[in-house]
Amino acid sequence: MDGRITRRLLMMSTVVAAIATPVLTPAALAVAVPDLPWPAANEIVRNTKLPSFPDKNFDATAYGAKGDNKTDNTEAFRKAIAACNAAGGGHVIVPRGTYVTGAIHLLSNVDFHLEDGVLLKFSGDASKFPTVLTRYEGIECMNRSPMVYAYKQTNIAITGRGTLDAGATGSWNKGSDRSYLESLVAKGTPPEKRVVPGSGKNMRSTFIEPYSCDTVLIQGVTLKNPKFWQIHPTLCKNVTVDDVHTDPSTAANNTDACDPESCDHVVISNSDLGAHDDNVAIKSGRDEDGRRLNVPCQNIVVVNCRMNGNWGAITCGSEQTGGIRNVYGYKLNCVNATKFALYVKSNTKRGGFSQNINLDSVSGVFARAFVYVTTTYNSQTGNNVPKFGPFVISNSSCTKASKVLDVSGLPQEHVKGLEVRDSKFNGVGSTTNTVKNVDGLKFTNVTANGKPMTK
Image (cartoon, rainbow, N blue to C red; front, side, top):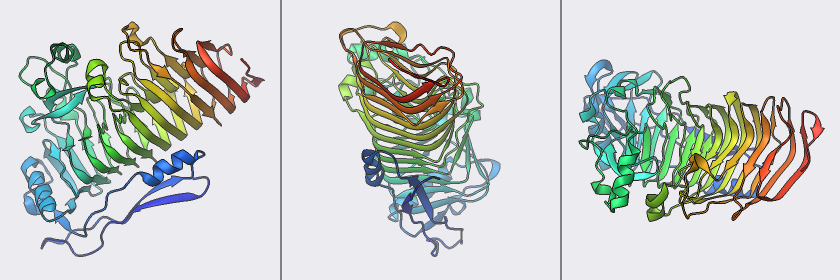
């Protein structure tokens, strides 16, 4: 890592376990974030709280868990998490083995720690995933539980070198009948009565989803075979996603790597983000239901990540009705053919805003434009004009792109600020940018195919 390293330390215990059976305690973990080129981004990192846990360990096998690739461990994990929570918190340790399980619901002050060599195989039995409050593509509803879920909990974590595999959930985890939810919203049906299971409609469940939680850490784990969005913190504060590995190989659509939605203070760092869609997709609700809640997603830092998804490295929307602001992406390496480094999308039905979005030291191969901003996404129209800008790109590069900028505001609402500086774009198919209804366009020391880029 270049530059001075700022370490936010999460110290985990090295003392005696809280139960009779000795287990290995997690080593001291650290979240390492370099100094960022924006004072405001450094302030976000400093102010994003990390969880801490009592020096107590709870071996999941003492509660009946068996890593034999056949035992249903849903109840054993529930008991271990409940015992840890009741004792004031600590670490639930899952030792090496292959564990079949249903949904895992985290409780306050619990670190669910997967040792190296752990494989969690989530069940194909839909009954193991109870109905919970969630958000499906920006609309609140009652749907089958995500694989790992928490609701209104504080100080929680899932850590370790284990792997979580959702492949078997494909038997039930399918469907995209969002229009059904939209019809319920139009009727004024409250979220608790928008029940998907048993409705004859199907909508997928996300992989890891803390919902209305505060102080969350997801660290070290690997996700495999997702069926929908992989990490989806929703309506949360103080979220850290560090050193995670998400799956780019799945053929399933919409498997974004990380989708913070209506969250405040999120740090995504040191991760290998693979996806069959966006790498980081920042969201804040859809249309009328998004306006009902009206909670922005804000104060987001994405740093030192490898991006291996086929759409946006950093995407804002399209579910951004509550708005998005104060986003900082630094040292992001996009591999293979990511379509856009920055992809911002809304329309006059969705509304919302994307403001103060900043990328620095982003590099890679981009199948389309380095920056793509559209205010007419999916040609949907209404009376809610999105407000975009400023956007700033600095110290960035590409080895291939169709063009550098494809940015269009609306005649009645221009993009308010677009600046590119100190950047070199090579392999550009067309050096003629598409820029419409943009105020404050500025290039400083920018080249495309070795020639200065100007307005």
